[in-house]
Image (tube, rainbow, N blue to C red):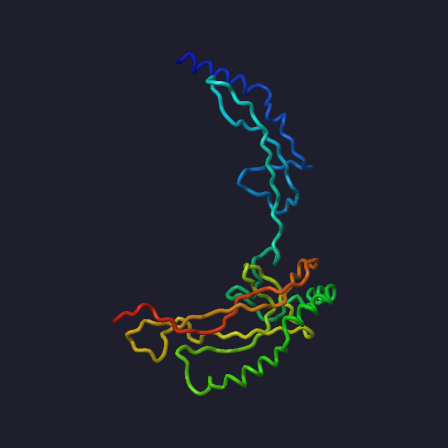
Length: 253
């Protein structure tokens, strides 16, 4: 048994010293050397596809039975496509504590107008389908029909306002620029808790309650200002919509 182990070790050493047949059969159809590790993707800056043909043994033989010849294993690694949204930082400076930013000096108005001019018919069609009623008509209807808010109190008070977002984070987590120009204005109704996480009013003290912010989904016409070849699209965003009283399981104090 000891002699057989020595022969196997010696054979392995001689084999490693010879030319590696695997390296001879390795073909890379890529002008630059590419290091490929299974389970990993090529960095995004490498936009090419690496095709490797690597021989790999299907079985292993140590002198027992008939050895199985190695079969070529082809590995395809393709760099992922860049998602729609801002390059670099995941969010603009104005969006550190919220999922949308109002129009300010950081809004890329020139880039947005350039994309609108490039896809004028597309923007006009999407905007007209999205806003059958002008935003100011919706605000007027809201103020006229919801006058009951001034005749009493809610269990959880909220503040209602209409805002014009400039940047916003869609439901995929991407920050995009919302089209908001003089010709194509977009407003969203935001209802935020005045006393978030505070105890609900008018409830007996035996209930453990708190005011919780609720959200809805709004559709807005948006663009990627850093990729003008992308057409404007209607995206979906999470917007604060109500402040509700949440009561936990009934507990006596």
